[in-house]
Image (cartoon, rainbow, N blue to C red; front, side):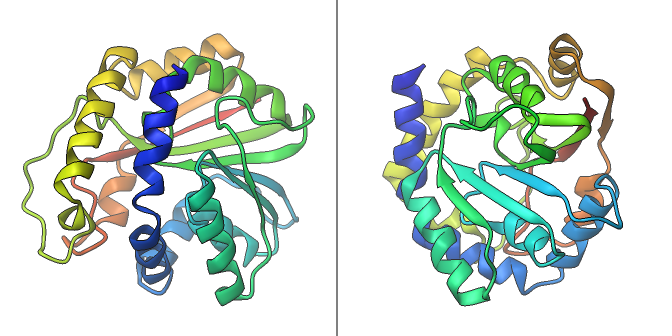
Length: 238
């Protein structure tokens, strides 16, 4: 497991610079309001929340939510991604807290957060059952987990992508590294989001739900931000 994590960390470290630029552009696109609309479906309104953004990358969700007035902590296993998030924060004038930390075992006190949010993270976790159990302990009573992801290792789309799409920028070495990581994770993860529902129930969550339509609402156009794999949103409460 640890060797695979190191592979995943190295893969994302090599993508940081272009990934940061892509996410800053996404923040300045119509996707910003679409993502906010999705988050507002689930997060409590009318009060300042303590939110943990797990697998923050270069900080996209952290910036959206910090700009709304919430106290946000973003964590990522990849040090280069956290440096990118801090750089973006300086450009945006926003102040989430960013930390290098393992998503499967975040080092926070129990019941530290009102909400946990993730985007395209859980498909990269070698031990998702362990992660869901740990995250449960970090939520306060009534807190919510909001997890956007896709079944990337089982559901393949053949949709053509524009030439300026982020996937077109990958080098041969990066594609090879991703293929190796994906092959390993396919053996560790079951088809989703059905598997997520079972794992969340086993971990003690309640009100576990899946929204399979968020993909259609967010990715209405095939543009440079388009995700060819239909994403879902899994939500669950403590």
